[in-house]
Image (cartoon, rainbow over all chains, first blue to last red; front, top):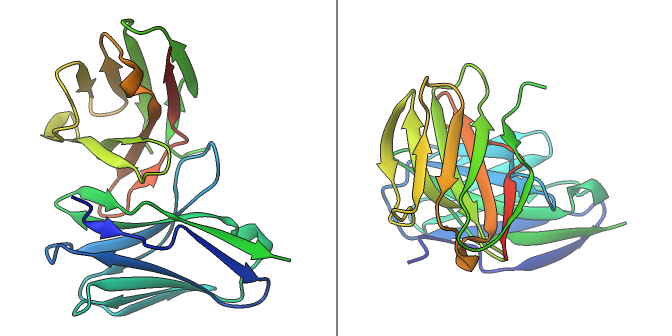
Length: 110
Length: 111
């Protein structure tokens, strides 16, 4: 059972525009959510996180929004840069276990 | 470099052989995790240590898999009698509180 879902396998965005990556989850017991970025042949790199008691966290060009009632979170990247091109994974934490989505491949077109 | 390190980065083995991977966490992190990632999927949790104690194991961790963290520092993951279905990227992560930081992974190919 996939408790964390990323329904868009890929997304293409023009450089300078906003990238919005979406993630849905089913388990209301998740207490912490994270976004990771992954390049080929490397491990996931931590980007940004949000506690379940908050609805927004911002770090530079990256903002994560959490809508608990909808069990939905999103990552906004603005402005998008070509170096942002990678696979982005959403993850949710419960009791020190991370549950990952299947990833969204972001391509930022120069 | 003070990040999580994993060795080897790549391992090719024949079916039925045993393999062992090593993970060195970030030095002040007391928690260490192992994940497995296959093509097109996100990482899947295998097991978790707090210091030297193995606190949780996923049902994915069959009896052919064993993990240790003998002194609460580095960890090893051993797979006995490897099968072709074991081919995957094996990722290690460490944390002090909530955020897990990942190593580069060990890619296992079982022929």
